[in-house]
Image 1: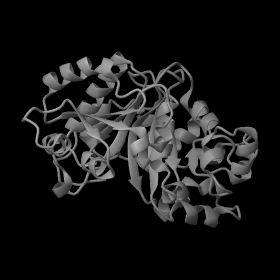
Image 2 (image 1 turned 45 degrees about the vertical axis):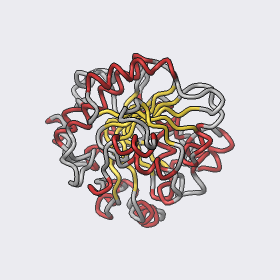
Image 3 (image 1 turned 180 degrees about the vertical axis):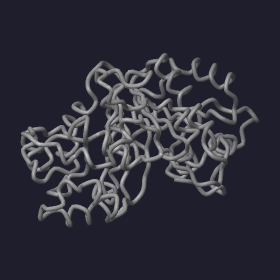
Amino acid sequence: MGKDPSRLISCWQLNKRAMGNRKKEIALQVNINTQELWEEMLGSKGLTVVDVYQGWCGPCKPMVSLFQKMRIEVGLDRLHFASAEADRLDVLEKYRGKCEPTFLFYIRGELVAVVKGANPTLLQKTILQQLEVEKKLPAEGQEWSMATDEELLGALKWPPHRKDGGEDGDIGSSGKTCTLGIIKPDAVAHGKAEEIIMKIQEAGFDILLKEERTLTEAEMQAFYQHRAREEAFERLVHHMCSGPSHLLILTKTEGTEDVVTAWRTFLGPCDPNVARREHPESLRAQYGTEMPFNAVHGSRDREDADRELALLFPSFKFSDKDKEAPPGAEAQTMVGPVEDPCVSERI
């Protein structure tokens, strides 16, 4: 996740390249019209907000006054703005032909947030949130992980889980429930991780924490220990350890909807072929191929979510009640019918 410090450049350099030999005036938004400029933007220090626009309408001018105000308040070194025409860059292909503006947020080359539409209140809120995240990251040149950095965990105000009889929505001070999402090695290997993350955020999910790493055999054996006697167990563990995965801790941005159920619905049936027939807009229908290569994982229910989060994010401080049973113990008591039509291959 850490970036080579030699590639970390300031927006001053980007402006020089984009503005040529014009006066020393620094443009509010750098226009990114080549892949080379896009790569340089990914290496910029601080937070960069990219206005993705269509050639026939241009950048979102109504937001310029907000950007100017925030740039003055925050400073040139920490906050940068750029614009990019969707038709000019392959990485923005999915945004071509869209009527509404889209704003992408990057920190050290990592996509951290997406805002759709010209909503100044939401834009300002997201900018301030991501600036707080950026502020808590380690010094440049050091490796960093959004999943294990304790200061970052504090900045994100992660809501602790509880099992003391509270309502589903009454978790921590934020009142939000959380669940686990995994973008599996097959989707990562096909270069679809960033596209999937964008769709997750566009669907109204908040990614509280994100970590990219290769899962270990020990982790996956514990993760799927309730399936240890199944024939598919070894194949499943091998697949999940075959390459990098993206681990996501998710909550829901709007409404009181249970995020565990909402996430499972967004994934679709676990078998990609079934998903394409019954839920063609789901993530598994779009990115899965065949079992067990169904692209994404979602916790089955609230109990599963607590167990899986405790296993894969052990640095998070759960309640004392959570700690009474070792990760995975609860799964042995989970019996009964499950709506998922391919429960025997539930991954």
